[in-house]
Amino acid sequence: MKRGDKIGSGLYRDCFEVPENPNLCVKVQRDRVTREIPELGISVDVRMEIFLLLKFGELDLNILEYETISSLPDCLRQFTPSIVHLDEDSIMQEKSQLIMSRPRDFDGAYSRTMQEYGGVANVDFWDQVDLVAESMLRYDLFSPDIFYRGQNIIVQRDTPTTYRPVLIDTKHMGRAMFHVRQPWLIFKSERLRAFHKNLDEFKGRFHLRGERENKVAA
Ligand SMILES: Nc1ncnc2c1ncn2[C@@H]1O[C@H](COP(=O)(O)OP(=O)(O)O)[C@@H](O)[C@H]1O
Ligand SMILES: [Mg+2]
Image (tube, rainbow, N blue to C red; front, side):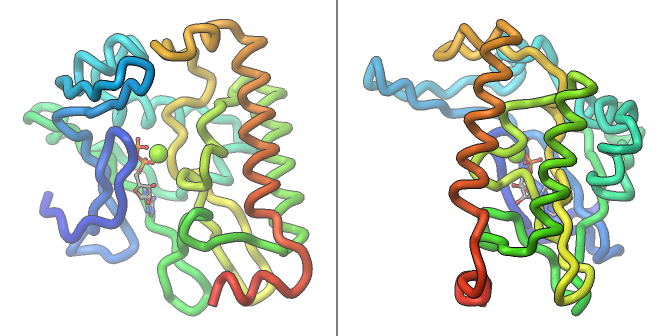
């Protein structure tokens, strides 16, 4: 499948336009990962698979994310992109491609990540964020990274006054990862603590009050 321009990048994957369908995007895992280790004053550059095996015990985050999304309960699946498809041919070839819908707003513009959007005042939006957080806890699918820095959540505006959160990066949900620099996250109690910390930071940074939103979003 052909890839268009790059839409965004995370730590592990790049996300591209799909030229033949503007409502879709495709995620592809990068070959290498570079991590700073400030404690040692160095930065390490390693093959992605080695890094992923150590951190997740997995080799392919697209397959992991596809499996995670496919098994979500409806109360969480409704907050993820409606179309999620793992390109079977691509798995046989060198790199898997995870195809997803690319959310748009009521005016046809592509919806932005919370990080790009800047902040939201809409009360319903924040009620839905609380619902997402409660469901993640109820089903033991919480992940400290979902709310991290607002880059894994898109703000979709269905009408000028109706907003909803879309979770675009769910690979960590319900997973215990091994963090070299935060080994204590192997314990559920510590992951819970990190989840609440990131959720509080997310709200503190992006939950705007009253008129401020238009200024930030403009
Ligand atoms: N469904 C989507 N629609 C629009 N943009 C997306 C979508 N999925 C990912 N992106 C963009 O690509 C970036 C990287 O994707 P992500 O899944 O978070 O990769 P990583 O696993 O590296 O964190 C996101 O932060 C976002 O900017
Ligand atoms: Mg991400």
